[in-house]
Length: 153
Image (cartoon, rainbow, N blue to C red; front, top):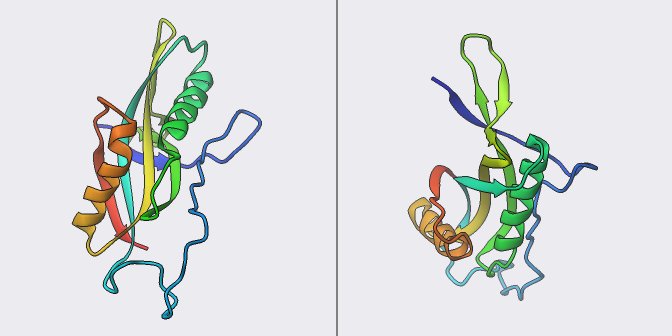
C-alpha cells in the first residue's frame, strides 16, 4: 500500500511551486492582534487536491501546469487567510523505500496529487477547516478537498 506524504517544491527555473498569499498589512488593534475575536488564533489546514491536466508532454510539465492553475485560482484570499502553499504529494514504496511524485500521465492527460496548505484565523481546528473550505472551495469548482492535517500555528 502506498503512503502519502508531501514533497515540498520551491521556485526553480522549472516554474513556481509555492504561492505566497501573505495578506497586506491590516489595521492592528491596541493589543497588537489583528483578529476580530480575542480567542482566535492561526491554524494551518492542509487539503489533498487531485488536479487533471490536459495536453501535458511530460510529468514535469503536468506538475508545473497543475501548480500554476491551482495557484491562480486560490490567490484571492480574505483577511482570515494567509500563506497559501502548494506542494506535490509524494508516494512511497514500503518494499524498496523509494519515493515518487503523485502523478499519472497517460496520452498527454495527467492526474497530479497536490497538497494545498492555508493558514486560517479561527477559534478551533474544526472552524479553521470549515473556513478554509469556504475560502478555496468556490475557486476549485467540482474538485474534492480532502482534509489531511489541521494544526495550530
